[in-house]
Amino acid sequence: MTQAAYVLHRRPYLDDAALAELLLADDSRVGAVVRGMAAKKSHKRAAMQPFVELELTLAGQGDLKNARAIEVKTAHSLTGNALYAGFYVNELIIRLVPRGTDTDGLFALYQQTLLALMSTEVEPVLRRFELSLCHRLGYGIDLWRDSSGQPLNAEGRYQLVPEEGLLADVKGPYPGLHLLAIAQDNWQDSDTRRFAKHFCRALLAPHLGDKPLKSRELFRLAGGVQ
Image (cartoon, rainbow, N blue to C red):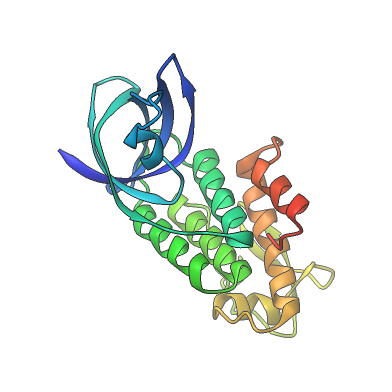
């Protein structure tokens, strides 16, 4: 059966093949072998690029599928900071979503993120993606109420405990004012963006582990805002 897919990452595999990590339209992530990549005029080599929506078929019962009948459906053109942001989004999915896992709404979220990166500022798009991904994976945080169920106070300060939520703490690093702005998807204030970046990193850290993200280093070298 033909289905839509995006290439999250690929690397050489055997003599004429590539090993690709794919995000499928059924919201799952799979590994697939793509053969026939070595030919100079191979349409597969041109198709198997990041941010290109493909139509393909997958065969096989093991951990690695065989990708066949690959055709380009839509190519998203990302440049500058948006390009580095796209690599970051891809890397987050690979690091946080195991192969074979269905993550409800992930494919649509990914498409929306790519389209937003092409047309709007990068930083709010990344924060929306990080927060949405965390909720879909089951470790999102309620930004309207603290861990005791009380509404957040715009004048208060809070501490993030990933397993519990937001704890009221007069010495906490996160002002209620900015947490509520994030909840309202209001990114006009530069301080809100700064706190949101710190907050999302703290939220993701326990799940990413100690291995650095390569895309963050690329962003840093490029002078990006990720």
